[in-house]
Length: 357
Image (cartoon, rainbow, N blue to C red; front, top):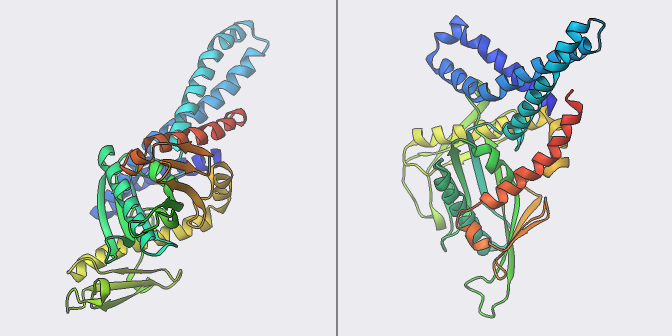
């Protein structure tokens, strides 16, 4: 955790320097992105900077309390409890602010939901998850935008990409990455047998422009005619866009809008998120390993949760939590699950206090 906080403070100080750079100030797009990222880091970075100062002050005051000068010794002994109390209070605040990972304070993310094994029932479940997250976002006051969706003929979803924006959005939704399994009786099941199917969820940060810069020479852009379910034509112009990132091989396709420009803009947002995530994971493999030990990897292939409709039961396998209120959760009330996950990670991270000084 301390390593992550050091990186955040270093980034914050770099952004402070950029805000005073005439070249950055002259670029309205860049200054807006820098200011936005700087603002998002301010609460965390300033608290951690003060926390480091307190450690130095406590060390110096402890030295004086053990020194030969009686006057300084007495004053230091009186001052030390207040300094330690402030340090502990700040550490608790830092724990709260970093639960959910190194980027817990981020206010924008992209979520990809894909139907897995189970055919049409899996696609219907993917649709249920999409509505659950949208309803949860509505209750939290977050903005939600559909970037891409591939519906099925029976009303399910093969896949959907959503963009979320709001306070706490990545801290909470970051826990949703992984495999989601559903057990229920499909409407088409005449004998009332319970079927098992699955969907996968991936939650990616939506980076600022200053964090990932994709130039035209970094990708190939292909245009083609959009088509809908069953192959029928949506329009006869080449409005659909496919972007292929050369270095990573990541491909993004977008055809929801009739405008080529709108499809390109949406595709670029998704591409930036995927490319940023690709390099972020490579760069922070050590931290990913630490997080896996705390609360699971969040890998899309990892089964994190089971939704059992006949028993109204929801189980999160990462923390062995079972709730018999699936009806409430699937209706959008994710708070009991999110609070339990946050508290679990908080308890795990609290151990760092012993090595904080």
